[in-house]
Each structure stands twice: as structure tokens, then as C-alpha cells.
Amino acid sequence: MGKASRDKRDIYYRKAKEEGWRARSAFKLLQIDEEFNIFEGVKRVVDLCAAPGSWSQVLSRKLYLPAKLSPDTKDDDLPLIVAIDLQPMAPIEGVIQVQGDITNAKTAEVVIRHFDGCKADLVVCDGAPDVTGLHDMDEFVQSQLILAGLTIVTHILKGGGKFIAKNFRGKDTSLLYCQLKLFFTEVTFAKPKSSRNSSIEAFAVCENYSPPEGFNEKDLHRLLEKIGSPSGTEDLDCSSAWLEGPNKMYIPFLACGDLSGYDSDRSYPLPKAADGTYQCLDPVQPPIAPPYKRALEMKKTSNQGIQNLEKLSLNS
Ligand code: SAM
Image (cartoon, rainbow, N blue to C red):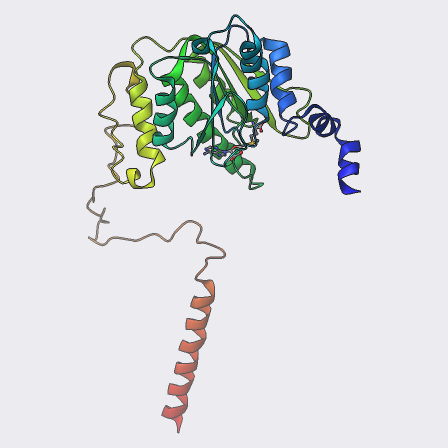
């Protein structure tokens, strides 16, 4: 009864089962392809955060199976599809699976090894953290997955290649756009029809990979290595002195106010009146409800109690 009602409410859920897709997400990738033609000329792909595997199925059906069935394809020419997820995934024809965390540099290294020095034409990332419901938090964790994805991209994607990454629309979307624009000449945020309007997810479609001149992907990888491993955070070199050239980060830091004015870290002599005394002024507005208010009241009543007791003992 419950299942049938979802079939009725969610046409993509129903269609996914009819067409043999493991998840309704398959339609999102298919619809992105309809618009952006992302599979054209693609022979090597990385599918990040791939479980349960509907995007990998799309890649297999669109790229691997047609090549395999073609009498002209030699074994060496078969498309290479590498899929990574924290979760294990049931096998899919033509898809190499790696189980691991994409924010961990070691997983990135395993993926890179599978490519054996060759570059990928396409990297897709449908990664989603376990949503907490705290929007800012979810958006932040999601952006860490995109950063991890981008790090793998910088090692593996060929010049001119494409990167598709799920993101959560929010206040940092324009920042993400600017960051992706540093690496790709075309960046579009797409919302496939199969993605519910009530969902804040969208997909960054990044085309024509062209990193800035002098960009050293090893530095981004090192950053992931340091941040990604819990033990690595201790020796995280915050000065980023090891970064060079265009990879170096300069964090703007601006001193404001009159630089020859008072120094907040120094002590200054107290101004004295003509008679040599110093008059200390009361605060202009004392706190009206300080957290220590009750403690003051208790102290006051107990002082009064002591004074009353003292008066009583003097009079007796
Ligand atoms: N594209 C998939 C499909 O079509 O079947 C669906 C992906 S699902 C929406 C999100 C996946 O992200 C989950 O399987 C989850 O395990 C994976 N994920 C989340 N964080 C990850 C991480 N740090 N490393 C690897 N996978 C991760």
C-alpha cells in the first residue's frame, strides 16, 4: 500500500523501477546530458559518491555497453569507469568500484592509480552527506564534498574535460560559482526536472577544464591530505608557507583606524585633577540583567542578615 502510494506520487521513482535504474537519481544525470551533451566523446569517467549506483548504471549503459557490443571496439578501447563511495555497491558491468571516503587523500590516490597516468574526460559527483536539517551546516558539509571532488578533478581531468557536482543552493552558491570559474571556462547551475522543486539541490555543470597557469594540483592535494586525515590536522601548517606562485593563499588583513592613536595593548598613566586625585567615572550604562544579578542579590541579602544579627547581638 505504502509502496504503491509512492509510485503514484513520484513518477520518477516508478519509472526508475520500470527501466531498471537503482535510484530515481539516474534521471537527473540523463536530463543533464539532454541539455549539456556531457557524454559526447567521453571514454574515461570517475563517478564520485556513486552508491547505490544509478549514475554508474547510466555511464555503463551510455558508454561501456555500446562500446562492448560494437564489433569495432578492441579491449584496450573499452571505456574506463571508476566509481567511489563510502558504501559498498552491487556490481555493474564495466564499472570498477572503490570503497572509500572521497575527502581522504588515500582514496584520491587509489582513483588516480586506476587511471595509470591517463586523464579522465568527465568526473561526476552526486555526493550528499547525511542531512542534519541545519541548512548552513548541511551546505558546509556538502561544500567539503565538492572541494574533495575538485581536488580529484585537478589530478585526473584532462584539459577541456567536464565536472558535474551536486550542490545545495544557499548563501555561498555565488562563492562556489567563482571558485569553480577559476578552473572551468563555463559553469552553469542546472536543476533537472526530476529534482524536486522542494529540494535545494542543484548541479554545477562545469565545462572546459582549464586551470590557472602555474596551478599546482599537488598543493590542493596536500591541503586535502592535511585536512582530510584527523591526525593530519595537528600539523596543519596554517601559514601555508609551503604554497608557491599562484597557489599561494593571501588572506587580506587590514588594520583600521588612526595608526598613531592609542594602542589597546599598552597601559597609560591616569589623568590627575589639579588637587592630584584621580576621579574614576562610573560606566555610562551598567548591564541591566547581568548573569551575576542573582548572585549579587543573594550576597546583598546575606550581608543584611549578618548586619541584623550583629545589631541583635549588640543590643542584647
Ligand atoms: N549517484 C548515486 C546514484 O545515482 O545511485 C546516488 C548518490 S547518493 C545521493 C549520495 C552518496 O554519497 C551516498 O551513497 C553516500 O554514501 C555518498 N557519500 C557521502 N559522503 C561521502 C564521502 N565522503 N565519500 C564517499 N561517498 C560519500
